[in-house]
Length: 187
Image (cartoon, helix red, strand yellow):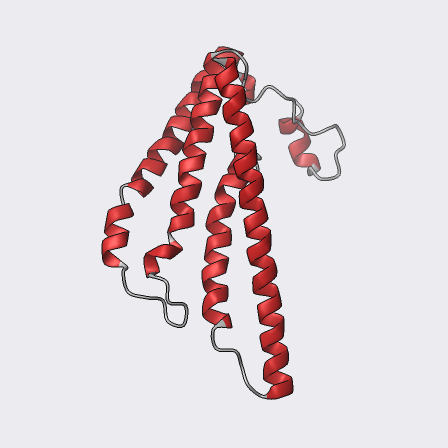
Protein backbone atom coordinates (compact mmCIF):
# COMPACT_ATOMS: atom_id res chain seq x y z
CA UNK A 1 0.00 0.00 0.00
CA UNK A 2 2.83 2.43 0.81
CA UNK A 3 4.29 1.90 -2.70
CA UNK A 4 0.96 2.93 -4.20
CA UNK A 5 0.75 5.98 -1.95
CA UNK A 6 4.35 6.97 -2.78
CA UNK A 7 3.65 6.62 -6.50
CA UNK A 8 0.46 8.63 -6.13
CA UNK A 9 2.35 11.32 -4.22
CA UNK A 10 4.97 11.52 -6.98
CA UNK A 11 2.25 11.77 -9.63
CA UNK A 12 0.48 14.51 -7.68
CA UNK A 13 3.80 16.36 -7.29
CA UNK A 14 4.27 16.30 -11.07
CA UNK A 15 0.69 17.50 -11.57
CA UNK A 16 1.24 20.28 -9.02
CA UNK A 17 4.39 21.46 -10.79
CA UNK A 18 2.71 21.27 -14.19
CA UNK A 19 -0.30 23.26 -13.00
CA UNK A 20 1.96 25.84 -11.38
CA UNK A 21 4.00 26.13 -14.60
CA UNK A 22 0.87 26.56 -16.70
CA UNK A 23 -0.48 29.18 -14.26
CA UNK A 24 2.81 31.12 -14.35
CA UNK A 25 2.92 30.97 -18.16
CA UNK A 26 -0.70 32.14 -18.40
CA UNK A 27 -0.01 34.96 -15.95
CA UNK A 28 3.09 36.03 -17.92
CA UNK A 29 1.07 36.01 -21.17
CA UNK A 30 -1.70 38.05 -19.52
CA UNK A 31 0.81 40.56 -18.13
CA UNK A 32 2.68 40.98 -21.42
CA UNK A 33 -0.55 41.26 -23.44
CA UNK A 34 -1.87 43.95 -21.08
CA UNK A 35 1.38 45.94 -21.15
CA UNK A 36 1.43 45.77 -24.96
CA UNK A 37 -2.23 46.82 -25.02
CA UNK A 38 -1.57 49.80 -22.73
CA UNK A 39 1.42 50.92 -24.80
CA UNK A 40 -0.55 50.44 -28.02
CA UNK A 41 -3.43 52.47 -26.65
CA UNK A 42 -1.28 55.41 -25.59
CA UNK A 43 1.40 55.36 -28.29
CA UNK A 44 -0.60 54.24 -31.34
CA UNK A 45 -4.02 55.39 -30.16
CA UNK A 46 -5.58 51.97 -30.76
CA UNK A 47 -6.41 49.22 -28.32
CA UNK A 48 -6.01 45.48 -28.88
CA UNK A 49 -9.62 44.35 -28.48
CA UNK A 50 -9.01 40.71 -27.53
CA UNK A 51 -6.74 41.44 -24.55
CA UNK A 52 -9.46 42.26 -22.00
CA UNK A 53 -11.70 39.20 -22.58
CA UNK A 54 -8.71 36.84 -22.72
CA UNK A 55 -7.32 38.40 -19.53
CA UNK A 56 -10.62 37.75 -17.76
CA UNK A 57 -10.68 34.13 -18.92
CA UNK A 58 -7.03 33.57 -18.00
CA UNK A 59 -7.57 35.10 -14.56
CA UNK A 60 -10.44 32.66 -13.91
CA UNK A 61 -8.31 29.74 -15.17
CA UNK A 62 -5.36 30.72 -12.96
CA UNK A 63 -7.63 31.04 -9.92
CA UNK A 64 -9.31 27.68 -10.46
CA UNK A 65 -6.08 25.87 -11.28
CA UNK A 66 -4.53 27.33 -8.14
CA UNK A 67 -7.07 25.62 -5.88
CA UNK A 68 -5.28 22.29 -6.15
CA UNK A 69 -1.84 23.81 -5.61
CA UNK A 70 -3.04 25.73 -2.52
CA UNK A 71 -4.72 22.64 -1.11
CA UNK A 72 -1.75 20.34 -1.77
CA UNK A 73 0.68 22.78 -0.16
CA UNK A 74 -1.57 23.25 2.86
CA UNK A 75 -2.03 26.94 2.14
CA UNK A 76 -5.80 26.74 2.42
CA UNK A 77 -7.53 27.93 5.57
CA UNK A 78 -7.40 25.32 8.32
CA UNK A 79 -8.75 25.96 11.79
CA UNK A 80 -6.99 23.34 13.86
CA UNK A 81 -6.67 24.96 17.27
CA UNK A 82 -8.93 22.40 18.95
CA UNK A 83 -7.96 19.39 16.82
CA UNK A 84 -4.31 19.65 17.88
CA UNK A 85 -5.33 19.07 21.49
CA UNK A 86 -6.62 15.54 20.78
CA UNK A 87 -4.60 12.33 20.61
CA UNK A 88 -3.52 10.87 17.25
CA UNK A 89 -6.50 8.50 16.70
CA UNK A 90 -9.01 11.30 17.27
CA UNK A 91 -7.03 13.67 15.02
CA UNK A 92 -7.03 10.98 12.30
CA UNK A 93 -10.78 10.50 12.66
CA UNK A 94 -11.43 14.24 12.49
CA UNK A 95 -9.12 14.62 9.49
CA UNK A 96 -10.86 11.76 7.65
CA UNK A 97 -14.22 13.41 8.34
CA UNK A 98 -12.81 16.73 7.07
CA UNK A 99 -11.48 15.13 3.89
CA UNK A 100 -14.81 13.35 3.41
CA UNK A 101 -16.53 16.76 3.55
CA UNK A 102 -14.07 18.10 0.95
CA UNK A 103 -14.76 15.08 -1.28
CA UNK A 104 -18.50 15.63 -0.80
CA UNK A 105 -18.18 19.29 -1.81
CA UNK A 106 -16.19 18.27 -4.88
CA UNK A 107 -18.97 15.80 -5.66
CA UNK A 108 -21.47 18.66 -5.57
CA UNK A 109 -19.30 20.61 -7.98
CA UNK A 110 -18.95 17.55 -10.24
CA UNK A 111 -22.73 17.15 -10.22
CA UNK A 112 -23.04 20.46 -12.11
CA UNK A 113 -20.77 19.49 -15.02
CA UNK A 114 -23.49 18.50 -17.49
CA UNK A 115 -25.79 21.36 -16.51
CA UNK A 116 -22.93 23.84 -17.05
CA UNK A 117 -21.98 22.31 -20.40
CA UNK A 118 -25.61 22.25 -21.59
CA UNK A 119 -26.35 25.77 -20.40
CA UNK A 120 -23.16 27.53 -21.46
CA UNK A 121 -22.48 26.49 -25.04
CA UNK A 122 -22.46 30.01 -26.45
CA UNK A 123 -19.05 31.51 -27.23
CA UNK A 124 -17.30 34.07 -25.07
CA UNK A 125 -17.15 37.28 -27.10
CA UNK A 126 -13.76 37.94 -28.74
CA UNK A 127 -12.41 34.68 -27.32
CA UNK A 128 -14.39 32.14 -29.29
CA UNK A 129 -14.36 29.42 -26.63
CA UNK A 130 -17.64 28.19 -25.16
CA UNK A 131 -18.51 29.70 -21.79
CA UNK A 132 -18.26 26.34 -20.05
CA UNK A 133 -14.51 26.36 -20.81
CA UNK A 134 -14.18 28.76 -17.89
CA UNK A 135 -15.20 25.93 -15.52
CA UNK A 136 -12.87 23.23 -16.91
CA UNK A 137 -9.93 24.21 -14.63
CA UNK A 138 -12.28 24.11 -11.63
CA UNK A 139 -13.27 20.54 -12.44
CA UNK A 140 -9.61 19.58 -12.95
CA UNK A 141 -8.61 21.10 -9.62
CA UNK A 142 -11.51 19.37 -7.86
CA UNK A 143 -10.49 16.04 -9.37
CA UNK A 144 -6.91 16.38 -8.15
CA UNK A 145 -8.08 17.63 -4.73
CA UNK A 146 -10.21 14.49 -4.40
CA UNK A 147 -7.20 12.33 -5.34
CA UNK A 148 -5.07 14.23 -2.79
CA UNK A 149 -7.72 13.70 -0.09
CA UNK A 150 -7.90 9.99 -0.85
CA UNK A 151 -4.10 9.81 -0.74
CA UNK A 152 -4.01 11.54 2.65
CA UNK A 153 -6.75 9.28 3.99
CA UNK A 154 -4.77 6.27 2.75
CA UNK A 155 -1.66 7.63 4.46
CA UNK A 156 -3.53 8.02 7.73
CA UNK A 157 -5.12 4.57 7.56
CA UNK A 158 -1.72 2.95 6.93
CA UNK A 159 -0.07 4.93 9.74
CA UNK A 160 2.25 6.82 7.40
CA UNK A 161 0.57 10.15 8.16
CA UNK A 162 -0.69 11.63 11.42
CA UNK A 163 -2.54 14.89 10.79
CA UNK A 164 -1.69 18.03 12.73
CA UNK A 165 1.36 16.35 14.23
CA UNK A 166 3.81 19.22 13.84
CA UNK A 167 3.82 21.87 16.53
CA UNK A 168 2.82 25.19 14.99
CA UNK A 169 2.11 27.13 18.14
CA UNK A 170 3.53 30.58 18.42
CA UNK A 171 6.70 31.14 20.40
CA UNK A 172 6.37 33.13 23.64
CA UNK A 173 6.53 36.86 22.99
CA UNK A 174 5.98 36.30 19.26
CA UNK A 175 5.59 39.83 17.81
CA UNK A 176 3.03 38.54 15.28
CA UNK A 177 0.68 37.33 18.04
CA UNK A 178 -1.01 40.01 20.17
CA UNK A 179 -0.23 39.79 23.87
CA UNK A 180 -3.88 39.06 24.71
CA UNK A 181 -3.71 35.91 22.57
CA UNK A 182 -0.34 34.68 23.87
CA UNK A 183 -2.01 32.72 26.67
CA UNK A 184 -4.51 31.04 24.33
CA UNK A 185 -1.81 30.19 21.80
CA UNK A 186 0.71 29.03 24.40
CA UNK A 187 -1.22 27.85 27.46
